[in-house]
Length: 433
Ligand code: ADP
Ligand code: ZN
Image (cartoon, rainbow, N blue to C red; front, side, top):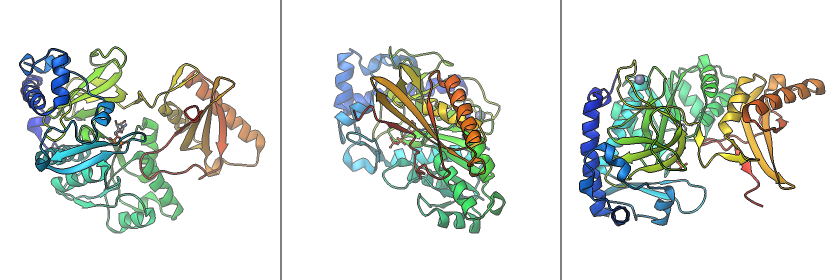
């Protein structure tokens, strides 16, 4: 099923002209309503008339999270306060949070794109769907919530917390779909097992997971333990929230709602636009947003874009998995290391739980990396030889994948702190020194 075939399956030519028309309108709108953009464009000597087609986007300035912070709270907002009906804020661990205001039309677009995602996963009006992203300033909860309502399925706004009660509801209300972070999905699986329940005792069939990077191995693990089919859901608050892109049944990349969010891939150092197929930083321009429209917003997310019709019938550009964030990337002894690389190694080995922490430090001017990983209960033993062997195999495998050696620390089952929202996987002590 396709929620909006007109928009999701239009020819590339039609999409090009729709995007061109929308970009022209957007540029005129921000030029007249956002001094920040008018100044930037004047400095670059570009006027709204210079933008004739979507290909002219390269003439426009980029926007960064820092720009949003520098103009905190409402500096980049284009619509008057009287038109804003809701505000979300991105968590951001340091500095000012990013404030995002939505007009009524923005909220309608958001619930439309979320309904497209859910339909692609196979959710129908007959489903009962639990939204277990946090409700509140974070966009996950309310964003997914209104998508489910728009689609016409039954939404259960479980949010996070009280996992036992949540599991009872999943069982008693025959909840068939769930949206949450992959970290929380695992936590849910663990809690289910602790309560003595099996995946056969519940009837979850569809999971919409996102808000943090995850791997193919993580997908298998979650599907196996919860007995559902796991789909990717991508989004970020600055652009809208969840619903920017979604996987279809083919699961070969995530379809971008390109009629609203125009994607580009750039080289994060030179800022040059890269061709489809090359890995780089993902950049979005919000083609229809009124509250906080953004030109060429640098997401810091690293991935590739793919063109070409998908077997599902949709024609939109797809994005590959996020392989990491350029600012999540650790540089250890000069080598780029992404937590996701460690995750995929751990998940390849059956001895370990998908619970890990990278601890980076600097000793005598040399960077050190410790990988703490939880051993599964069935594999944890007093047999030192066996444990040492397990540790060595993981260390060898990490070395070959990361190109640097890591000190492996085997941890007892359930000793690493669980997350109900986005998982935390890095402690970088170098920052504190
Ligand atoms: P906050 O900034 O408060 O953490 P956001 O929801 O705005 O909250 O975070 C958006 C970021 O979350 C994205 O830029 C991306 O790094 C990550 N993210 C969201 N969905 C996915 C996904 N499906 N896969 C990988 N990363 C994701
Ligand atoms: Zn598809």
